[in-house]
Amino acid sequence: MSFSESAGADRDHPDDLARLGAIAIALGRIAIGVGAAGLTRPALRALGFTDPDGATVALARLAGGRDIALGLHGLAVRDDPPELRRSVLLGAAVDAGDAAAFAVALIRGDGIDRTAAMNIPIAGSAVIAGAWVASRLSRPG
Image (tube, rainbow, N blue to C red; front, side, top):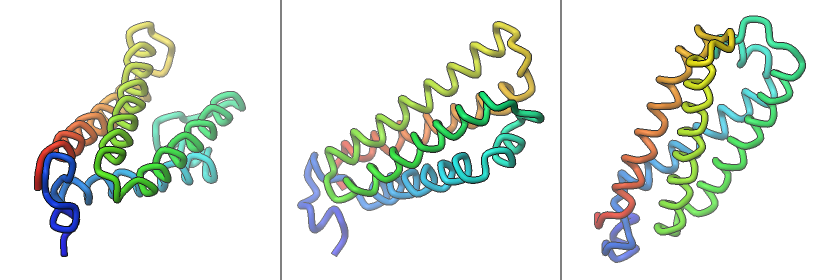
């Protein structure tokens, strides 16, 4: 029996693809968070930070913890459609904040132009994916 069938497939019970997308986002967040918190310097280099200082490393570890928490929350509420939608929207809002932070750094000329240019599309894509999944979570299956 599918998620939508077991849940009754009404406005509060989304389709299986939406639930799968939300779970994939949650698992991706956990993986990114573990990388940021546990393999911080290599993760930062992959994101365009060529020679991160201690403050950058500490902030990356904080962001890693944030992503792990968001991902674990998404998994914890995966069987509660309204809460799952809220979880996905919260993640999309965080991703929008990340995109905005990189955009501001680029506009202000904070010296991380390459890094900002690399990360704005990544964060923006995460916002779009989250918004798409959230929109499906609010529809019947």
